[in-house]
Length: 286
Image 1 (cartoon, helix red, strand yellow):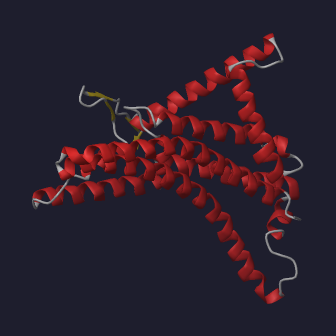
Image 2 (cartoon, rainbow, N blue to C red):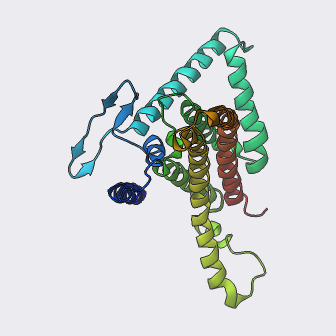
Image 3 (cartoon, one colour):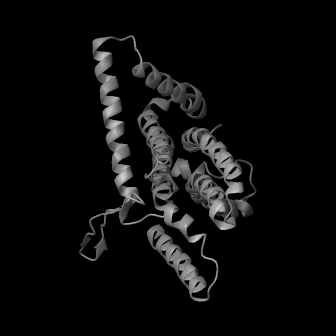
């Protein structure tokens, strides 16, 4: 459903731009959307474009898009990085160089995010949360490279990650408290009997808003930074004067450096909130 919503949104934006062009309006902002949205080609402008395979099978659109390519790249990088780190630990238990950096990040996520928010039994959720953290982190960093794409700025990607976290949260809560005990624990103690149906509905809606918040937060923050950078650079061409170039480039460079921090923060926040929601589901007594 998310894919259909995104497709409808993209079509609406493209129709709006087309209508503005037909009426002789200003369409300078169209190039920003061109660089932000997903596409069925790799863009190396002004050197050209590489079309990607379009696959339609049994009525399903399984076409490879730009964001899919860079998700695959992030997957390959994750496998290569952690395989090399694991190999280095076979040679020596004392990490050196890059392995030392990776251990620092893993220990930070474990001791500063997952263990405090989940508490007892956090080890069961450690592999998933570490994978999510590094997948988002690498995806955010890839998006800072010229001619690449930031796939965490795709609402379909963030919604899928949020949906997976949602099922992990429910599975963790049900496994620890039982099916009946988990849903019974959603209603606070001491609530009057006549309010129980209302509170139960409110808590169920609360369960659904948690993955929604995860998806929108990551999507909006990763999209906003790129739009700001492109808008600042676009001022040079919109105002059609070279005098604004130093100011635009300076501010764009500042935002670009800030995006490096944002890439780390957003991976941290998504992992921290997922871990917090898991802890709330598993340890309902707290």
